[in-house]
Length: 226
Image (cartoon, rainbow, N blue to C red; front, side, top):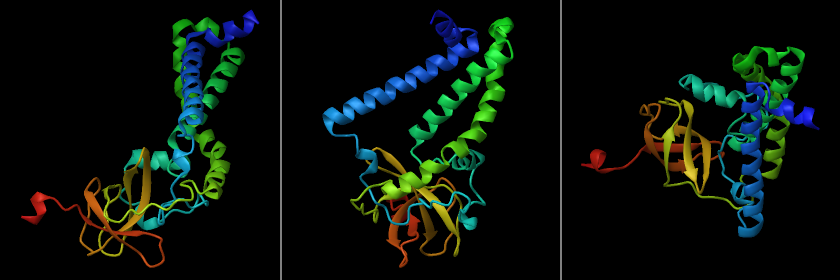
């Protein structure tokens, strides 16, 4: 048993990942307890949003919406964030990285590296990033089947959102908005055809007839109505 605990905290790379994974475990424990006692456990699955990007086929994204996304947005989408809750993906990433770090410390003899063992975390994180994509793929279908947003429909018309791509004309892009404590990404198109830039504040004005995307206009405020 002592050898096991020694492995968890030695060398330094193991200690870092063990602490990070432990913090995540405490977070989930607290979440489960809080959900049981305060009725918040299903908060993340209480919305059914038409037009939200919850396609179960992770390989098929709207080609028109990908052209102006930032590298960071594309990196998050690659590991299925948006189709699976962020904390689920993040926790999966840290758990896989922790296991790989422990295994590599044994197979590569990292104990002899001393504090320099932390450098192994760079390739570990890179490998984990790609593994996480495939590890969370089954969860995409699970959350889609659960409704990832639940049974109760949420009316998004009139809400404000932030553009996550640049669109104009008939181009369909992406926007994000916060509903309760959740960040939701939806497919959007400019209602008037005017250009809407990345990071612009917009208002959801209507929904397409096929309910696949929303029509948005620039956010109405004092600066653009005077």
